[in-house]
Length: 167
Ligand code: COA
Image (cartoon, rainbow, N blue to C red):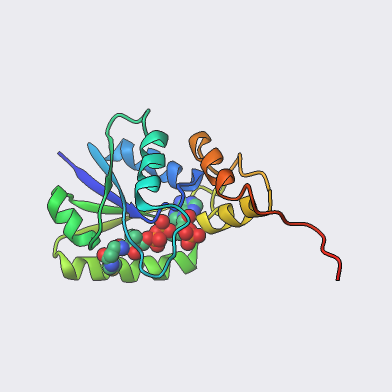
């Protein structure tokens, strides 16, 4: 039985992530989607909130399980008996970063490979950061995130008002 892990910050999950999840779920028997900690990022949502949104967004995909993990990706793979890591790649900048992570994860857990999925052109400009930035200025994120993610994101910014300022 093939088991793989798609780790990420998912702050929040976007339609770009969902495209990778659906494609990977067709190739592996079990796909774990893990909310992990990226020490370089400060989250808008707590890890628990991110995992809850992910779980709801993936509820119609039978072989996907959502997990929350505070530790190394390689250690979670060992724990889950995962054969591979899945990551989406949007372009050359992503690829350089992903190649390093894949190599380091393989050093930490020999035999662990990373499978790269090229991002769907329709989603390659979407990122969690842009979704948050657009929502923070009152922009419409409907086309960028799963339905269940839209309200939680816009609610985070409902008291922030932008617009013209007199100087
Ligand atoms: N379509 C659209 N956007 C995509 C995408 C796709 N297919 N794939 C990724 N993205 C975007 C995300 O929205 C995100 O945007 P952001 O930077 O604005 O948040 C960005 O690309 C990548 O984010 P994500 O996929 O969530 O991953 P990450 O780089 O934040 O996560 C971890 C990295 C969590 C996997 C990594 O830090 C980790 O493994 N942490 C655990 C500790 C560890 O093991 N460290 C050693 C690693 S070698």
